[in-house]
Length: 304
Image (cartoon, rainbow, N blue to C red):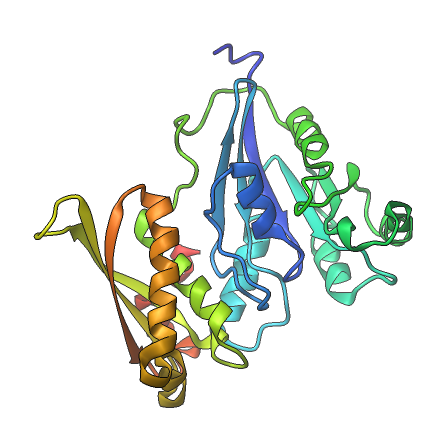
């Protein structure tokens, strides 16, 4: 590898909730490392996804959606998103087709006003438009808000213009060596990724306040004593209320059983091995506002 011809660098993906940041990351990495849900604030931690080709290596950082925080957990999530814009080589500001500028987007762009690195406006979900040219309205609304280095209407769902965006990112990266091994796709340990996959299944199965009150900790992960071809995984699902515990378990344990079955399928694909999975549900009252509980559950400031 010639360092004077190879490009490598770091790219932060920032935006409000539900614009498709995690879906984009999974698509370009080629493997599911960030969970996805239609629930706001699904992403809680910064997720590093690494794309390596024979010409470049990009370390993308998926960030929690920026919103007005009401809990200590949410405050840490928002801080993590803004912190992720420092020390990178360029930034993807992602939004969706709109008919008027959204206040949340204005706040994010205002926080980027002193940024010296390239910021790309990426308008995802153009597939929801009746005509592709309808995107011109969103472009005209946003192009005067910030001196973007480029504007890219894309559809991650239909894989439209994603390759064009990657080509432009490559141009913005500096020449340099690879930072990560070729086969590395994320810097998060397997336990973290497994916990996130379990949490995703609960988000899909529950409503109202329950999804925001869920935390998952993988307590143990080891080769099975009964069959070395299997990995035994034990995880605890934490909620804030006894009523939420009942919801997560479900009538006759049906909901937790469904969560377990769906989680096993994703974890098997992640690990490329067979697994046994045991899930427990416990109540940790008001954990989202308790610093000590946040630390225990993996949401300390250092873990973001």
